[in-house]
Image (cartoon, rainbow, N blue to C red):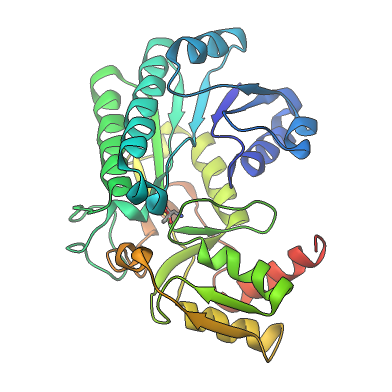
Length: 312
Ligand code: VAH
């Protein structure tokens, strides 16, 4: 049985749906401190749980007989810069609670990481799994800490710890919150409702990106991969790389020739400046078959407008 923390965020329900379609409705328990949406409530079990409340977390793990945790409760990059203490508390202490419970109860722990672990001194293009990691955002620092603590517990206590470094994730049904790559989701909603978008990054801010379905497939693949296939604990994954102006050009060509993009870069541009253009994800492909389906900004744009036309 799988417990997902931060289940009301951009990824929670999509991961739960994928696992539930394979193992049944009760195979996943979603938890969060947020009010669950109707679709979350009707999809299967949900419990209110704050990752900072270790006692409650322990009780839920034992009541539901959890043997696997996917830890998604996190303060993302942009919100973290606005509120570093909150980010430290949730990202470090919340993770520590989950880590200790996983160790005590012999639980498989999957905690996604991010390209935000890289920084201004890391290689920018096809950034390798193993390279310089000196991030200068609080988010990146807490994620490097997470990766190293997971590896430490794996080596010291034999914890089954697995992680993968996501690029920016683009989703249609659910919204991200507090991230630097969020512009690439917001732009589609704004194109549909206003035929214009004010971008908080510069036109040439190139970043690594991936469509939600590929992210979910990768996460579930790694979660269930036989441990003897895994030659490392943390894997880069990536599907495409584009800039705001390339995305705007694609929206113009596929959706509306007079779509208007304006640029008002703010503090988030400084974060984007330190992150990779693309990640080398060859090891993920070799070890557990990572193979994203949507690999260009063109395919992504087509997919997003198809999905969103069902909702607006
Ligand atoms: C952020 N979407 O922008 C997240 C992500 C790769 C970036 O971790 O903070």
